[in-house]
Amino acid sequence: MNFKKVVSVISALCMMSTVMPIFPAQNTHTITVQAYEIGEDNLGYDLKTNSETGENYAVILGTKEKRAEIIIPETFTASDGILYPVTEIQGAGFLSSGAFCNDDVLERVVIGKNVKTIGQEAFENDTVLKEIQFSEGLETIEPWGFSKCTALESVTLPASLKLIEGQAFRENENLKTVEFLGGNDLVIGSYAFYGDKALETLIMGEGVSEIKDAFSYCEALNNVQLSPTLKTIGTNAFSYCTALTEIEIPASVETVGESAFHMDSNLKTIKLNEGLKTIARTAFWLTGVEELTIPSTVESIGNQAFECRNLKTITFLGKETPVAGSIPKTAVIRGYEGSTAQEYAEKNGYTFELIDSEPETSESESQTEQYQQGDADGNGKIDILDVITLNKAVMGKESLTENSLKAIDFNSNGKPDSEEALTVLKYIVGLITELA
Image (cartoon, rainbow, N blue to C red):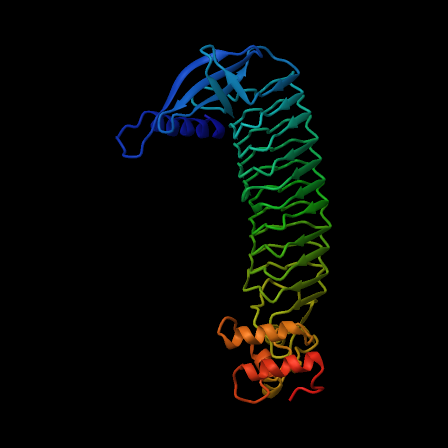
């Protein structure tokens, strides 16, 4: 029994235990199968009712006859007149195969807006499938859902997605462009696009939170725009993407996982933004990067993270950033005076260069910030708003900043009062020419 069949059996057993629990449980509910029906569109529908919620829904089982275009409707009206939202396309299970897998006729699919789940192997090995039109509302694409669809050249995925499971688009050898319109805290699972050797462009909108080892061995990938909400780039996420020449890690990313860009030999430009905390071992191992800047927010760097033969300069912006990563001995380490970077370089025989010192401010200077006399609201000018702010402060309805208090404390009593508010008002209307 191969791996996928094992997964199918386990999934089926889990579903069976939900439908017919062996041991009664307080919160257990059942799914009642109403009927199997064939619609006028020659699609098979499994009609179900959730006994806990009372909701009806339909699962697409497949098609009675193969054809070039399949349109998954939003709803199905059963023979008894009951309307069923179509929420799922059947995946492979213990006694079933994916609804449309191994179809050598199907060229175009339109997914209805009520479909939330595309099941395991639902469209696997559909070798002439060229176009998939997804609708907002889709939440999950299960394992191998569209794997080995060798005629597919581009996919645009809806912002409603929460999960793309492992192998979902694996080995689609002609897939060139993948665009995520967004995501609902979306996780892109292991091997989701593994080995898509023609994939060149990857665009991610806002809402993607995690990429697991999803794009390894995408050997043509050279244009990557990561999501501005991305938090984790997982282990082997982009390993062996040998055409990739540049990458910018968004400020939202906290972790670059183990071997995330491992063996991306042409990756010469890597921009790491403030906010990054963890760079795991071998994260950029044997990339082509020549110059690298480590943000001050980085707290952990794993072994061999920067073992890059072409690395000439590595700059550490944090004074206490732990230095590691098997930096080549030929590289110059740059950092602030007294930093861990300087200590590491001098201890291990690296050439060290100081970067511009951080501004040094004496204690007295730091306590005396610039302010404008009479500017109670801190907007840089003296006007009636300052009088209003002062009166609110006198009544206890507003608090003044330290600088604002200094700006209006003409009588040096350390607090705002009505006398000072009157002084500012006189200055505004021209009765006095100086604030004292």
